[in-house]
Length: 116
Length: 114
Image 1 (cartoon, chains in turn red, blue):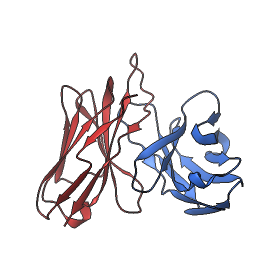
Image 2 (spheres, chains in turn brown, purple):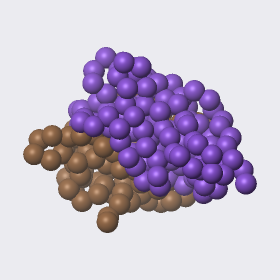
Image 3 (cartoon, rainbow over the protein chains, first blue to last red):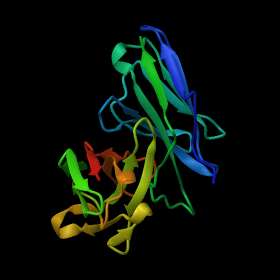
Image 4 (tube, each protein chain N blue to C red):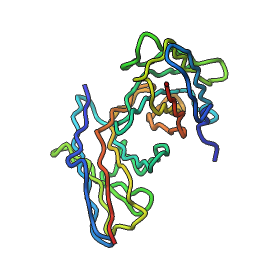
């Protein structure tokens, strides 16, 4: 079965640089979520999109922005990177069937971002 | 607001022993509850979920959990631990609305000794 695809899987950046993470949801999933997991931490919700509109917003820094495109893939843009941004970034997707969403989120493998 | 508390950041069991990982939730609306497992340097794999219906849910790898509304609990159990069960386990809560965040507990590290 198709899974959530994230690219790149690993990314190394310098402080103050920018990074773009991409997420391709499972086919026919219309909702995308972004989470950040620091070392030894639980995943923290950043932002979500439903039908290309922002749905929910968590602890996403102002330096970060995200969007969902017409093909439902999503990109997380991160600017002015800081050492503390080093983390595993997960994307998840969920389906809506006949107008009903059970909000079951399927996670991608994550992008490991290292900021030096 | 929703929250999850996982009691015990680290649980150690012997191979073949019962596994019990505790999760209590707080939610002002009917919750959807999940258990995820994460192996080192890997992603989050769904073990099982409770949305509606039967309160005893069975998942993969022999795990099961029971939703107890009166106790606001969703504890994860497995009758007999295997060495391969050693991992980080996260309990998470959300509710039935598209795009709503999953709120995770702090996680419980399960160690299995031979």
